[in-house]
Amino acid sequence: NQSLTLSLQFVPYGDKQKLLVSRDITRLERVHTMRRDFVANVSHELRTPLTVIGGFLETLAEEGAPDPETHKWALTLMTDQTRRMQRLVEDLLTLSRLEDSENLVREDTVNIPKMLRELCHEAESLSAGRHRIHLKLDTKAKLLGNMDELRSAFSNLVSNAIRYTPDGGTITLNWAIRDEQGVFSVQDSGIGIEPEHIPRLTERFYRVDRGRSRETGGTGLGLAIVKHVLTCHQAKLEIVSELGKGSCFSAWLPAARLITHKSE
Ligand code: ADP
Image (tube, rainbow, N blue to C red):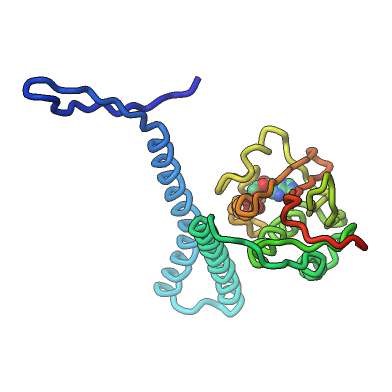
């Protein structure tokens, strides 16, 4: 039950006749709609922080300096909103860079175990003792790829796990070889996701719970970035989740990208 968009056009054909030309522009139409939705989403995301900051500045201009406590509170709120816009712009730039470089050769040697140890330390500082964080390195295999992109993708998965896992929960980072492929997975004991949302999570700005995502500093672009990075590495994202129990996000990297040594 899919709709089809056709473009019909009469073009001159010989002296007296005209030819009716029909073109299938379904894909073009879809791209237009996606672009329109994307611009609407970005504008919407920017509008809220701008309204908050603009409102405070107007009040300051009209009413002069408030008492020190209100002043401090207003500055904190404005700083938070500015950071939110900065994160959004950073993520948008990352996505646009990825789109421009889809066909780039990604063949640097990336030391994944080392990268994961670093990510684990970052996770510990982000969690600030609220979660138990484990790192399981089942292989020492390295990978052929782009280090910055892989780091940004893995880091997004880890920060999501922290963001969507209540205090006291457990997060496990794992690097292993399964079915000859390299698998990096992040398992959490967090809020989980209802099955109907799972296929749409990597769409730009798709969120299960808008309020929770914003409250915890999400831009709604994290998984879109992850998916893009993985596609550029011919890799796949697998999401397994159970509501109220937790989620496991796994990046499956093709055997051809693995660098293993027999002794490992
Ligand atoms: P956000 O910035 O909102 O986290 P993402 O693209 O990273 O955006 O994720 C999209 C949505 O997927 C989130 O809003 C959240 O609803 C859901 N999600 C992502 N990771 C997890 C997780 N580990 N547990 C539960 N839900 C998650």
